[in-house]
Length: 290
Ligand SMILES: [Mn+2]
Image 1 (cartoon, rainbow, N blue to C red):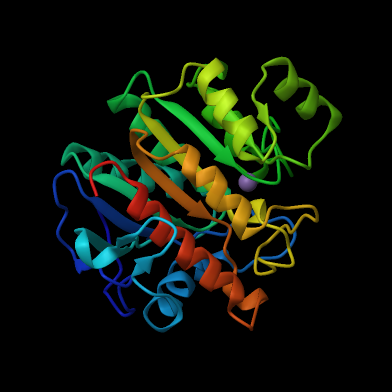
Image 2: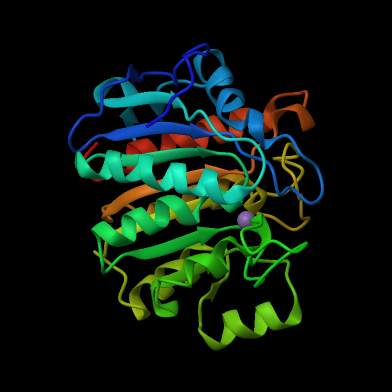
């Protein structure tokens, strides 16, 4: 994979540049070329890493686990082509394939949501029974947006080009068109952002124990918590609710995840970056092979 020369800090507790079998590999993909409202996610990977050293602890009280007790690597950032999303998605697909080929767990930092179909396709090729859980404010099911089929507003539509609809759960969605909501409800993919609904959906869709890819759009959270994101949407979840949702994932077979849509410059307080860094910590500590 084509990485930028390293000029930023690593995520707290990470080792550099060595993909370890069975362990997580963090990779930044700061693409924001299709943003329709407020740009800035190109700074997402370094914004998340930048606050991780001073802004959060390595220890998670919620899980009673510590990043210092696990091994994972931070590969830095992909060197991305400018402009259209397709070459970026292709590069990230190839990079994710390399990580998965070493039996490691991709932990992608966006970038806008348009990048996610790349790593999800790579995961699907390795795990044909893959299931995807999208945590997001927006349905992202448009066929095209502003003339682009690979816009951030189309991310899950592109995933459904290859993934069966009963292998997708969409958690916390509170914005979209009437047609998008009708489709999600018909497919019983729409899951309210609380632990009991999420646990029930995991069970009824028979996703327990399946290889899981998680895609976390930070606008899942309420804008009062994460204002540094491209398309904020009122009515989002609290950190406490995230911890309850995470509990449902305890012991599950998570084979990869991404955290997307952090736009650090839109939140000079850096609160949003701290939430993203803490989310990264909690997910790393949830992985089955930690
Ligand atoms: Mn999204």
